[in-house]
Length: 302
Image (cartoon, rainbow, N blue to C red):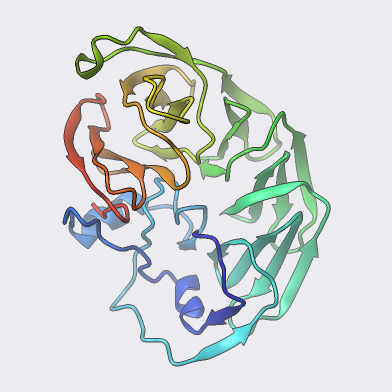
């Protein structure tokens, strides 16, 4: 979810907890049917369960009917940070603390501190997963710790699919068993092959960018490379979700900061940096072939 900069949670926050629509359509006009989006998010937590709403980073959750017009302030909570909202609870990461707040009235269910936390929590089933200097699994009902994994560097906001937690930490992509915290697989580097559009750039062996990954179609879609300038050492990769083996790579030199994203929905992968005014590739989710280029202020629904 976008960083929560206000101290007030409006009445629409209650609608959010029950699965209201939260995304905006891209400026390129790449709209699509609600049915397609619902199909892409089927089987996931109902609500805003991770950094961009769901495992595909689509910034969209299904809803019945239109978004309700705010009627005023339902309640306030004197903290700021990043949050997920699932099944009537708001899970707020604020500093090195995680707060669970009732979405209906703002009452505190539990708080946990001192866990070296960062980014947006991800909620799957009865567990809240938090990145940062460590990867932490908390019981959603009580905040009790289930397991903790120390990490090098700072982990991205987690993405959780089919019992696996995916995070990037210190340039490495990790797939962690959601039940016990054991490592399913890990990738430190990926061979980024030059494309026809960049014929004068040599192939490169690169690490993973510090952006939340998107998971869909049995694949993990990630930004790779330095991502600090247009120096030809950045792009995107699709890995098998169960093994970490490379499906494809795509070379696209660009800068991740400050609002880069990778979004997967349907048969497409959208990439870019929100609001930078430049065009970014839309890729075939299966092959990595470039389908078109868009200028997107907010990632589009599909």
